[in-house]
Image (tube, rainbow, N blue to C red; front, side, top):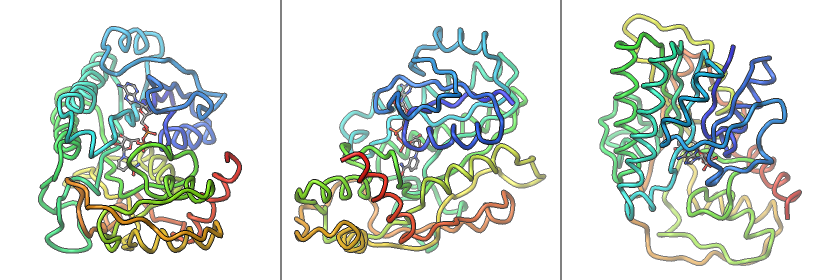
Length: 311
Ligand SMILES: NC(=O)c1ccc[n+]([C@@H]2O[C@H](COP(=O)([O-])OP(=O)(O)OC[C@H]3O[C@@H](n4cnc5c(N)ncnc54)[C@H](O)[C@@H]3O)[C@@H](O)[C@H]2O)c1
């Protein structure tokens, strides 16, 4: 199949590209290299440095490549930044997605796979683990815009005749994650510990998240590629482990793995973030045939090994 992966130079997108290429697909990466890195792009993939907000440049790529599938990972990914600059989040995460949807319709794309969020969509959960049926009550523009993009993809699927799969990721971590942003506590702590710098925990550190390893997430994208629509099943799936882990626990495990001897520095909790969440992946297990394969211990160990190579 011919697959266009947007955000394919980024953390998760680059692992998805690797997985698709391993299965023998022809992959084209679209990325503006805002946070993505050229060296993360698989050598066997075609690459076009294009911004998803630029519909003319995008159309040129669609016209030449004629993708069967769009796998859409390009995004503004910061919850905190989306609070400060909601217009930019709308431009990239809604309007950029809409550009891709319109071109998917015009160029007869067969499937649209979308990287959405489970961690920032449901708000503070009313029951745990959170299923896909939980009300959508985001606490920040990032979640509002991901939810809106989901709706556009669903509505236009009927009009344009493509199939779609929406994957709502929990907190993804692993090799290639950017340790210099404000999101991605595992990457940030790992890098700072390896450089023997202080690590900041926002809040009391007892806030818990559902941490899923990036290779498991890439595998979910492979399952999504092969997913056939089923009657009465909305193709929206949490991709998670159903295991809550606190930020303090992440800190402690990494501290042991890195042999770091400082204590964390605690600062005021950040706005727009949930306190305690973990997600059910039962629907993905049943209909996509996907389950996580890596425990948090295994995933953290592999992440530390990878970051050691870059310090
Ligand atoms: N990391 C997580 O825990 C997590 C959780 C839920 C959902 N997601 C979603 O997964 C996707 C990938 O996230 P990531 O963590 O790999 O982040 P990332 O920043 O590494 O990847 C995003 C990629 O998109 C590119 N990009 C950004 N704006 C662009 C634009 N306007 N045009 C073209 N390319 C653009 C960046 O250069 C980067 O390569 C995003 O859609 C994100 O919202 C991530």
